[in-house]
Length: 208
Image (cartoon, rainbow, N blue to C red):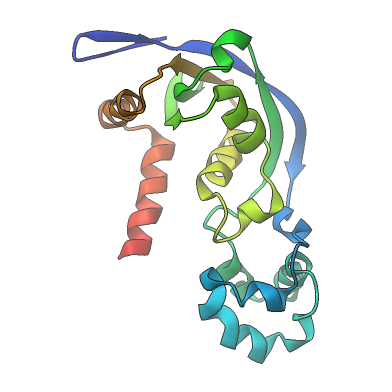
């Protein structure tokens, strides 16, 4: 695959996805590094403190993930306030395989589903690290409101898409960070990838 921007051609190398685990649900419940009481004392959660102490006093000393899972089990939608917008979806664990030399570089990556470009992003670190250790390996705290919403968003979409479609990454090694962002923005503007636009819509709704 290649993309021509301002008469310059950028080549993207195809890298396949190797799925290690599927059907990962309620991942947030595994977070046990602090209790619910300790969590609501953190700056990102302070607006939830009064409601939590008033209505869920019996859960305060439990590990945060387990306590929030119990809120969900009780049928209280309040549990979602602790998570990012993509923090309670179904995930998978995967790695990419292909040109290892290229995967050790950084640059711009795309996600292709049934030959349609659905997402574009940048890797300031290596492609291999970004995809294998972050996008393809969501961790429990990443599901929370101060976690990594983009990784959850992309992983969940890939997980869902792989059930019916062929999905792969395309990588274009670039060293200069300014050039990376220019290419990413140009691709998003031209092709309007579905997952980028959906993510931006969620951000705008939060701002409003």
